[in-house]
Picture: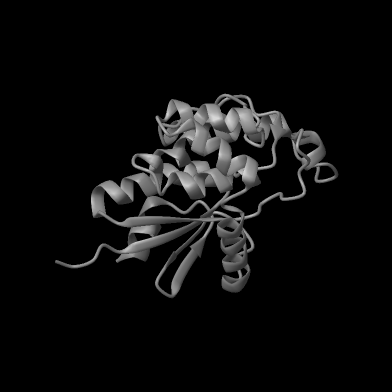
Length: 198
């Protein structure tokens, strides 16, 4: 019995390319039985608790945000993913700490998809403790434990370790996919990820 291949996915819940890539990673799991290990990455760690508009986030870069959104919506649709009308970015640090705990619970793996959808589809502030507790509850996770994870920051060290691992690996953009000593950066086509695990 061979051990399943492990693919490390460096990712952040406010990264649209990570959300897009999640559909391809799910397909890898289904078709090749790979084991996925999420490594949390700080994409915009300076985002304030109340969030920041996309206009402010991309200020001075000359982006046409409505056009960007339309292109992203089309890409998501091609992968079968819903995509709302994103206007804000939020601080994802608490969401990462919650997810770090959730994956240790029965059925907790579904937290990744739930956080992506709460943000990209429903436009929720995934930096808000009450929003996070509600998401946990909907997944059938223990509400009191979820609240404790967020209030007492019991998984702060685990996420700090992930951020440190990102620095050690030299990861500067997400998603980044690593298998053994090989890696690829960006929302790669499914075939590229398949090559990586082979």
